[in-house]
Amino acid sequence: SRYIQPDDMEDILYDYHVADGMAALQSVDQVVCQRAYRLAVLKKHGVTTAEFDSSLVYYMRHADRMHQIYEHLAKRGRVAGCVGQWSR
Image 1 (cartoon, rainbow, N blue to C red):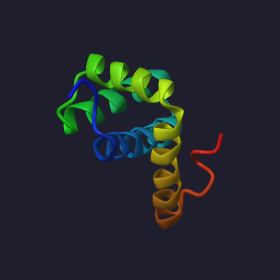
Image 2: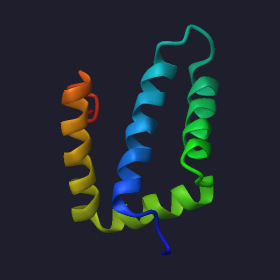
Image 3: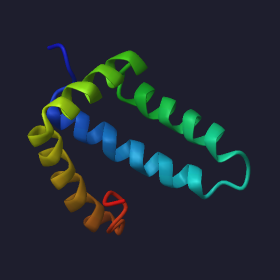
Image 4: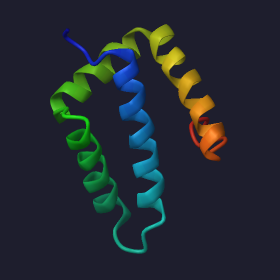
């Protein structure tokens, strides 16, 4: 497939948002931490930055699919105690 499948994209985005939250808690350079954590997420999922970026473009062009992914993420966030994290 030319883009990351919805279930996989959901998992990656979940980890991405967790990584962003972790980076925001750092007292050192948050931008550097955020980049390192995001790269670690992509490595964990076996996805390159190019694959992730092109898939993100695909989902942004298919807003209904992206919306569905974020609906699932919102449910996962409530379970994990991260209510509102994805609504910013």
